[in-house]
Image (cartoon, rainbow, N blue to C red; front, side, top):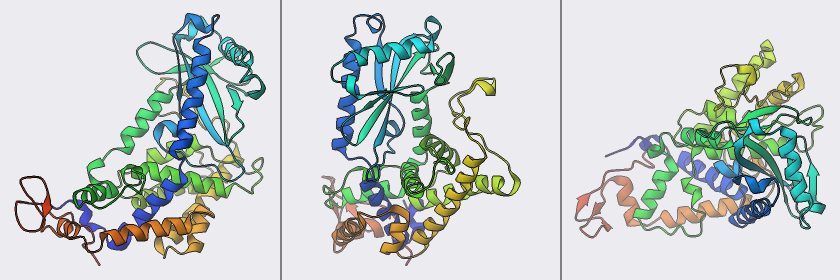
Length: 400
């Protein structure tokens, strides 16, 4: 049976495939991810061996943010990746104070020979500055109830009161939105066809095809965010945080099948927020979408520190991103348009990867048959062009 992917032209498909290849090369590689996982597991081991405070509780140290939801991007040259970690203490926050759990975390790590010279106190977390291209921010928190994943964490630098958060709940919320309409994702369907046609894909990271349009959208927007603010005075033009961008992008997602569609939709929705402030001084608020406290003033507010300059910065960023994105999607993928949106590096590699893929498609009779609807599957499950059960058309490249 023909699915809804027939509407994509060859050029639209190639652009989506290129965007996926670009985003894949922008994200943290598996070696770095493994190093980071080892780093926070080592912290978990140290805290678990504590014979004083943490000895009395079950604890769990886990990643939150982009590493948890699959939207990491490499830091720009000279910058570090911010690895956000949660220290989940399985005890009620009513039995503790924010300063207590913060101080106990610092005490244990400060008494460890490895971590002692690397520690830095931040407002709500303890930072470990590794001698590498990432640092780890450890946020301690206690449970609210045993029936869910919500936590209480230190509210601010004074650490005299609590604030609510829910990293695992947020990740589940994001993933549910990201995977809606999954059966119609353009590149995942393409990947299934490639497998059936036995096209070689081992040179590509698996997630080139299997990450969702929303995940790719977040990666691409964050990459341009990093470039946009690189030379700006962030005291006057504050950088838009990843959590604000990710939340807005997920809330505005419209179950698009393609990366291009998701990006265009995101820009349209975020541009409206920007215009509301630019022309009418209407300010938006970004709450944690999984914090359902009946009193809105007590919900986790990702924009609680925003001032007029933050909204003005948002306007400038979105307007500039819209211009650069339209130039890239609407015109040829020349090097100038590429660098405007993604910066230097990887241009030739990404184009060469796309060309190599296209070459592998040419002359493949199984692929041609699958796309045109003339493929058959024989009793052994092999694709051929003459006998067996007929496969439906997948509709790719139906328009020229």
